[in-house]
Length: 97
Length: 381
Image 1 (cartoon, rainbow over the protein chains, first blue to last red):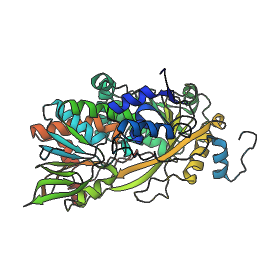
Image 2 (cartoon, rainbow over the protein chains, first blue to last red):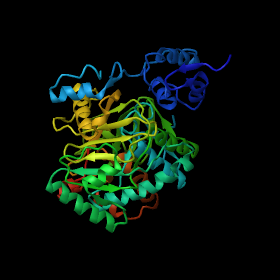
Image 3 (cartoon, one colour):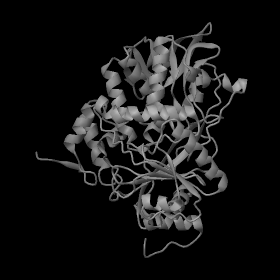
Image 4 (tube, one colour):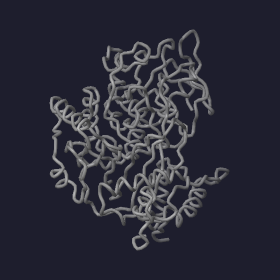
């Protein structure tokens, strides 16, 4: 099998996950930090479930259950101006948003 | 897990690991580190990576200088790229009192060898393209301050310490510290017990809880501190920018993200790492006040960590009155990462050589009952 990309935003491959696992990163939070997985534009919406499955396979045996990473705002990348408008009490500029 | 060790360190953050790293390199590798989560779970994995030497007290300036020197060689020593970039720190003051503080600090910093200098608002605008300095009185800039990526620092220290005999147990929680006749004899965890005569409390936001396991009350309290990052941008921002008026700080990471936070006067002590819309909106407003052209830049993610705060803004170091062998290494507020390399090294020398160390004596727990407090005033965020 050729190069398998797990996280498209940060260009993390299956081989990267294997190497991180071998280096001792055996939970999804550690794997995320070590490889950069789930830290890009999609914030894990495209890759976290796949990564969790690969991690479970790497763990194998009775240790296949792995917790997901903690979900953090924002749901979708949003311009800073929208939030600044909340603080100042002005309506967000729809054109910029 | 080992059942005995020369030393047990509770807390696998940058302070505990810096101590383990320096002790192991000096020949004491018989150490067990207990970390309740994964490496980078606590504040060491949640901070913005700022490393500044601009402080208001001589001790902090000296410790930060020594830490920067260690960070400059840490990538080579550990085999991890820590992405350390010395783009400087730019402080902005907005009133005469804050400006006078900057003037006094710069004098002190210069006397200790730092290249800090005062800048006019116009000079600051030349340093940061697009910076809005309306209302800014005076600025201070040290070109040798910088930012780094915290995670590889933690992994690098852990890897070297492990290779020198240190055992690091992640997802392991200390549940009891056994004290008999005023001396430490054992640490009990949810994965077994370790017999030892010395325990280091390097638990950051949890340091007060850990101290209570040995019947000791610390004045430290954890405060949530929120932070956010934007989408990555082409490199344009050299220094970390800090606004003294509201504690806003932001920098550009080596990945290109804008990363920053600000103080919140309404935050009360808690062990809460939830994210708030209040922070997101206040931070966005403050960021755009300083750099209006970032309005269309998208925020990607926000999270929170803890400041382990003490009444005088200084750490708690060294012996604990009444409990022989219980060593404090906590209370670093929001700047543990800036000082950890030097403090770890100094504490390692103090523990191994058993010599008198003025710094450890000065920042001992006794000071809170004896009333000898020297306050650090330059605390941001």
